[in-house]
Image (cartoon, rainbow, N blue to C red; front, side):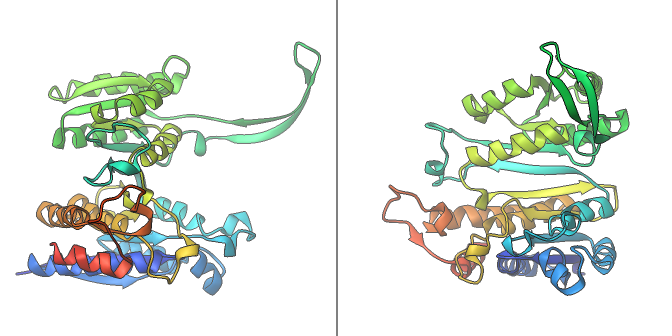
Amino acid sequence: MAKKYNIAVIPGDGIGPEITEAAIEVLEAVCERNNIEIFTKELKAGGIAIDEFGIPLPQETIAAAKESDAVLLGAVGGPKWDNVDPEIRPERAILGLRSGLGLYANIRPAAIYEGLEAASPLKNPGKIDFIIVRELTGGIYFGKNGVYQSGEKLPDGTVKGKIAYDTESYSEGEINRILKIGFEFAMKRRKKLTLVDKANVLVSSRMWRNLARQMSFDYPEVELECLYVDNASMQLISRPSSFDVIVTSNLFGDILSDEAGQIVGSIGMLPSASIGVQGEPGLFEPIHGSAPDLTGQDRANPLAAILSAAMMMRTMFGEEEVAYSIENAVRKTLAAGFRTGDITFVGDNNNVKLVGTKEITKAVIDNL
C-alpha cells in the first residue's frame, strides 16, 4: 500500500511559483518511483494575499497549513508592497506561519557542492558541510522593547534624550528544546555540536552554556564546543570545514546563517526548514528572496526549493532514501555542468551549460 502525504504549497510572490512548481515536479517524480503518493494544496500568502484579501496571511491559509503534513513555501515580498503598512507587509506572513504552526527551530544547511567551489569567497574552502540550528521565537526579537525620554546627562554633559531598549530573555524550556534538536542532529551526523553564545558578557548566554553542558551528559558521543559569537564568526571563515552542527540563539543565528550563506557562494543553493511542536507540520523553504527581476523569465534557480523538498521528506516523514535520491540528483546535475545564471562563474570550463529553470529541473528529474 502506498504511503500518502498531504503537502500545503505556498508559492508566494516573484519567482516563488516557478521554483515551487519545479520542486513539486521533482517530488512527484521521485515519489512515484518509491510508491509514495503526495497530495498538494496551493495556498496564498505574502503580497499576492495582500492584493486579494488585504492581509498577508489569511486565516484560511493558516487553517489549511495546520491540516497538512508539511508546508512548502516559495518566497514572499517584492517592491510592489514596499510602501504598505508595516503591520501587513508580505514578510509578516512568514512570522504568522511560524507562530501559527508553533515553529521554534530553524534548520539551515550550509554546503558547497562539487563544481561550485569558485562561488565561495574563500581561497581554499575545503569540504564545507554543516548546519545551523537557530532558535526562532525567543530572544531579543521577541523581548520587551520601547522608547522613552530621559533628561539625564552623560558624564560629558550631553543630554541622553530618547532612550531605546530591547530585551534579551530566554527560559530554560526554550533553550533546552533547541539544544535537544542540536544534539539529535549531531548524533545523526559527525557527532560534533558547537554552541555559539556571548557567555562572557550576557547572563542569558551563560544559561545557554550551562544547560548545554548539562545536556551533553545525555549525549556522551557528541563533542561539545562552546564559542563566543565574535570568535565563531571568525572561525567560520578560517576553518569552516571543522563545523558540523551549530546551535545558537535567534539573534546570533540570524547573523551567522547569512555569513554561512556567503561562505558557500550562492543563496540559490540553500534550503531551510522550520520545525517545532511535535505533530505540527514543518515549514520548508529556500532562503533566497522573491527575486522580482527574474520573475517569469525562466531564469530562476530552483535547486534550493528542490533541496528544501528533500529536507521535508527526510525531516517530516523519515524518507531518507527519497531525500538522498533528490540530493544526489542535484549533485549529478551540477557535475554534468548544468548551471543557472547565479551559479555561473568566470573561469568555468567548457562543460558548463547555462540553462533556465525548466531545463535544470528536467535534468534533476532525469538524474533521479
